[in-house]
Image (cartoon, rainbow, N blue to C red; front, side, top):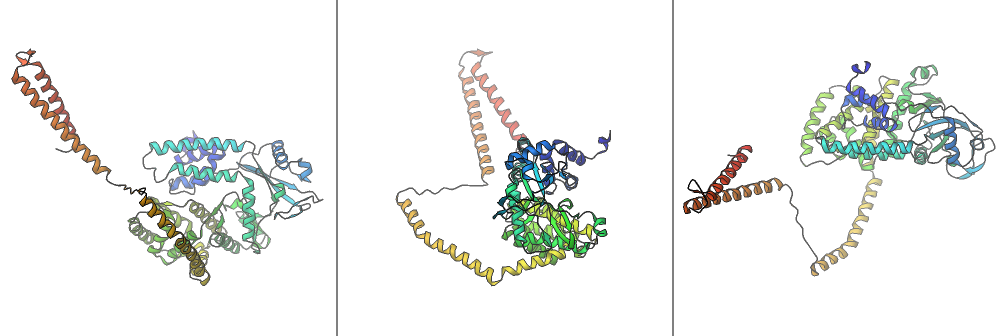
Amino acid sequence: TPAAHLTRWQRIRMAMEELGPSFVKLGQIAATRPDMIPQELCDELAKLHDTVAPFPFNQAKQTVEAELGDSIEAIFEKFDKTPVASASIAQVHKAVLPASGEPGRTASGEPGRTASGEVVAVKIQRPGIRRTIEVDLEIMMDIAVLMEKYLHGLDAVHPVGIVEEFARTIRKELDFSIEAGHIERFARNFQGNDTIFVPKVFRELSSRKVLTMEFVEGVKVSDISALREDGFDLELIASRGADLLLEQVFVHGFFHADPHPGNILILPDNVICFLDYGMMGTISPRHKDSLADMVIGIVRRDEKQITKAVLDLSVGDEPEAAERLEADVADFIEQHFYRSLKDINMGELITQLVQLLVKHRLRIIPDFYLLTKALATAEGNGRKLWPDFDMIKNTEPFARKIMAERFSPKTLAKGMYRSGIDLGHLLRDLPGDIREIVAQIKRGRMHVEFEHRGLEPMLKKHDQISNRIAFALVLAALIIGSSVIVLSGIPPKWYGIPVLGIVGYLAAGAMGFWLLVSILRHGKM
């Protein structure tokens, strides 16, 4: 059969496709986790597509009318029955708003009149998909619990935590009002930037299951031949796309986590438009600093700076982990940095650094995997557009800006202000806290508890020694007692020997043999 020629990883990918939307989504996210699964499986799961057959128009119509509270003919001037796109969670229909402009709220949320005659994209959630996903999540959690219970060595991977993280992500994707908020926040971040176009949202025509936004027509970034025919500047698009993603990460700390070619359109004047804002990532200011340190460390080939940065991005580090990790990072640099920076694949580099952390049983913050995926995807898009594209060259200015801002007067003043507030709170609360401690001591309610760690093996060995000594004393007493009974000649007798003494000797022999076997089994003689 054809399946006999498939690899193990291909079979896993095909099984996930057959299991349905939840498992497809899980596979897509797992493809960004080289710490969790082998790289070969990551590459295979990256091929998962959630394009599925569309659901019937009458079901789409029922959902729209139930969510928006009116007939579809009254809401839209025109509504295409055939969807323009269909995925595992939703499908998108093209529609036209009525020309009259009914009263309502604008895309920004301000009172006004809806846009007249605008062409819109209506994203409609699949009927019953929420229940299907909840059942799938229960199955995944049961599997994860069994994996942690019976498969050795999965404590570092923590399958239950991965399923919980996935459940949180996919439940957010099921609420289209959250995605609408993502789009509006994204638009505010890039307000005034004419290199990017963000479709506006029609809040008055959106809900948890329906999302209406401006319909955008453009050329997919993956359609290289069409871009060339239409006269687009491929080198500019590659650089601009990377800069936009890096601005999302290093400036706003809020980034599009799934910038694959199907989610990026190129508009006239080389303007870039991102689609599908269901999966977004966030990165805190502290982690932005660590990421900047890592990029600068890569540029400088500085293993100490790279090690410190990746440890700052991880949790669960031990005091001795840094030295071992630094030695591995130094070896890693020797293996990869003999080439020029433009020949280094930044996505692969960060992925392999993460694998080093896994080797040292360190865990990375969850959103860092989304960031790694986004950077790797953006780099792949850039190199398809322009083979000489250098992601590290584009990243370095953003990283240096972050590092320079640390020592700017504004940042230092803000840090001193926050420290001053914390110190003020401490000085304000300290007298009361000390008074409370003294009062507890006076009332005799102060208890000091000690907790020992690492003594369990010693205590276990101590108990084992004590048990063997007690066992030996009982054995000796049994032999001596049996000897006294034999010499005393207490009846009943068997062949002139007291039966009670014989029984004592037999019991002592069995106990002695048992003790000897136990000692030999543990290799202690």
